[in-house]
Length: 309
Image (cartoon, rainbow, N blue to C red):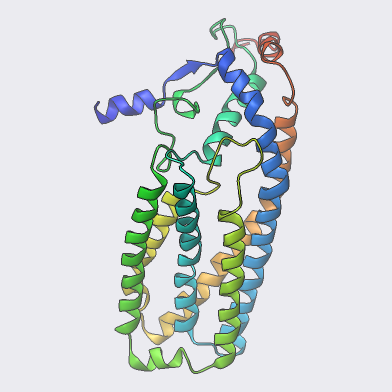
């Protein structure tokens, strides 16, 4: 199949049948429980930690003269902590006999697509047999949802480990070839080493809880993370490390300061998005416990006029 044909196949509109609506009813309670019991609390915890880390690191750089090289190395290498947690989670699933990965994001996409179709209502130009959704958003579609779907946990764990080692090697080699003075300066301040070093076990414990947590009771997904995104992140950092660590002393301070600003800023964005998650939960909850026939009746009754009216 050509690339254009694959794209058209992924983006084709298909009718939401009774089996999809029944699957929607089955998935919705577990997804709501996941958002309320894990996702919001986890995002809040991560956001507060990111803001604290950003503030502490900036204070260390500008008030206590921490080594910019140390800060930059810590930010870069800390991305391998969640990678390790994801590899451990994949290995555990492999030992459990799981052969196909289904991500919580795929389930969320399916539930969200059905909910949006039901909430939009029926236009006069829509087919009479039911609402529509993208074929790629169907849980049982023959179109792979993302880089994790229908990938063996063992194969993906080996892939992450292989490229993770390559990326880490790039970073370590880049550090080795920097100016010896800058490399020695990294270990000159024991307080900076202690403060930054303490954040790594905390991050590791949080990632352990997040990645190795068992699926919610009744959930059909088996991973709550996108391993493909983590792989891309560590490889990009590995490829960028020769450029990052070859900067001059003056430029290195600016680069090192940018990293905690981005981390803390992303924490602020995550906190600001929490009310949006609550609105999403409230919107989805309106459909909880409703039979498939009633969902279809709601969609048909919510008839909208043509766009030109």
